[in-house]
Length: 475
Image (cartoon, rainbow, N blue to C red; front, side, top):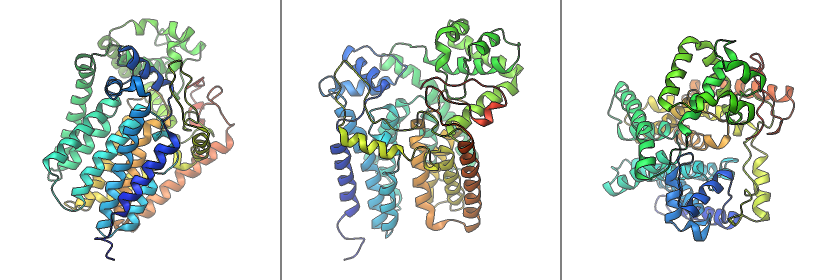
């Protein structure tokens, strides 16, 4: 039987994987963030610390009666349907092995382990994958995307942009690179930067005005984190520095300590400022102490990319139990916990280091850029560009190192490379392999030389020890 006209086996396989996911993990795991948003669903009181669009949709789907179930079905369905559309289209193009590889990529630990957690990161990944699958269904076949499909893709991308505060760095490049293949790179760059600026400016207004979410002060967190990082590195140039150093308030891992105890008291004046005033203060501190700011951002980037860090760097393993909650949210059973424990085994391996996926995205980007006008290359370009823009943004806008923040770029990088794998330039592939080997060797060496850490006693990455940073205490 002709492979291109036989039954849609990839579609059946994706639906089977969806069924297994729903059956094994029903009704999805709930973390602390999930519980906070569920309480907003029950109370009808929303704020913008967590995405109000998620809580509003959760309420609309009957979350008050059905718990995590509706959102779990939504994110799992978007996830596997997006992958299934890509896999089936590849099969019909005569690339069945690539189709199977796409479905196998969906089972990558720890990505699948986090996709069964009802959380903004999993919702973003599901929405982005569904949009990718819809676009790929037509674009990979060299066809124009029909208006109805464009409408659905746009809705999915808008949801993805609203469901994570930094998603603009992934959504806008993906959309621009997908829709503007005829534009030259200067035009694409301007559209991406302008679009990101517009989305970042519009999101708070949508959250507060349209979705009626209260101002939680979340917009101050980035400025406070970076101001504290500058203060502890700039000697006595900033008056808060001494108190922050005494209380061990600043860590490359996350910003959480800055709102607690002595650290909270040391940053009280910053917390009382209006966001505009606070960011002006940060801008002045950056201009006066650029090296301190660079060290603050580079040590955090290393932490969130999980490169030169000790073994078992925290907040990577997917949860094997739900957060205790008096509202009565149900949790998956023992079989799911066993599966999660198996998936967690891989989180400290290179497959769980976002920086390794960045290399894959760079190789895919290089290959795709050499094939302008090719429909497969254009989709790979959109995926790789989205990955690299989001990962680059962590160098400027990021306050924590959780692995779940990287779910979309990790999977998008893998998809981009799969699409271009039969077109790779041999020299570029060898260079990428050498870079990857160097990253893995250096990262593994640091892990072997450093003591094992837990979230309560996390050690400083060796790269950060030279500037005497304190330790993270919890995640």
